[in-house]
Image (cartoon, rainbow, N blue to C red; front, side, top):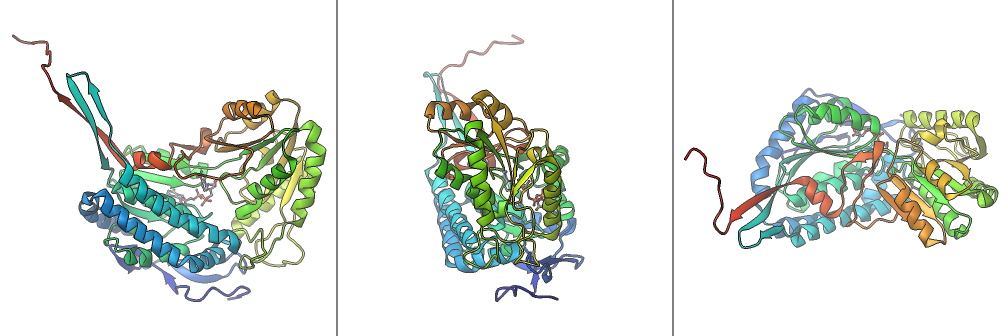
Length: 496
Ligand code: NAD
């Protein structure tokens, strides 16, 4: 095994499932290899779950459900705060593991650990503060809503920011009173191996959280197909999302789909150019460009176009690409050689479709590992594949527009609709564009800064449903309306 990048101390020899509070191998003993994105060599193996393992986990979650869902909200909230404490107490280790396994720069992996803890604190607070609605109909009737947790939640997560995205689903599901089976992404299972100790330390009862590792088409599919998992929260690619929607139709599952994006950044000539430039660079190159809300299409008003493109290219050439564990690294290694090859294919396509103005190849000082210098293509036509398709790497497409109408037309000219960003000093115009753009989220004069109370999700091929704040609690609970007559009820008398 070549080890150009030794694993951090304490990496487990084998990553196991966690079912009913026990670390277990797969029923059939199968495992899969796990590699890091710098040496691309296997550093551990993980249990490869199948239908049998998923069924065991669902049984454990089903057995734990009555007691967990019966706890008072305050009691569950206390436990979730302890989970947050346990996450925070291992923030450095978590960042080191995440950075090693996924290739994220260590400074950005640290931010993920903080955010993961905040998810638990936030949803602990939400569930305590949440009321249930009542509707009075004069003196005749009172109607009130009773919320119940849906049951065993199936959570399926991708490899970009794995631990943080797991927390984004675990926290509201547990707060709402669901028990869970989570299937982490197979390219990055390492950080999920921290959950068992975290949950034990917080005294989360056995079986409330169960983890089944494995390949999507096997372990993930088994979770989607399981008749006793009434809800699936999925974050991943649009193609997989479509497949899961089809598969889950048989049992009519409740679904949340957070899918791909090709989000536009619309920059008008009157924008604060320095701020817009910083934001464009950070928005598309942070997290190695492996970010669902990356501003990967930059549309610039013609008067500013040449200057903006030139400066963006100059800065992109200077972005520090390097080993994920190095604190000066701004862009690390892409997660997996398969994904790296896919991103490089897009770069080759881009060379034919548009004008390459920065990057486009592996930096000379990094002969191995999945590294790519941040890449900028200019004059990208709306029909180009690099304008239309999600690349999910440090690659950005830039195109000019002449007026507001064309800016909106170009912004809306893909199948996706996750996020959008608008840069202008004319706030009226900023709002007009924000309202006209087809996306679930828009930022005016800012990059992706999120408040956990706000709805998160996309339109068109970017997803179904919203999570975040009360939206998450709505998703993980069923609302039942109880109608109570307070006075006389007029009933037409049949059969008299
Ligand atoms: P992916 O769709 O390949 O995999 C996501 C998860 O689904 C993995 O755990 C995988 O094992 C599992 N899976 C695969 N096939 C399955 C099946 N048949 N049944 C059940 N589960 C299955 O996505 P990825 O490559 O891991 O992640 C990148 C994608 O995720 C990008 O498109 C990105 O935009 C998207 N993403 C979206 C958001 C969002 O909030 N909208 C956030 C992060 C990432």
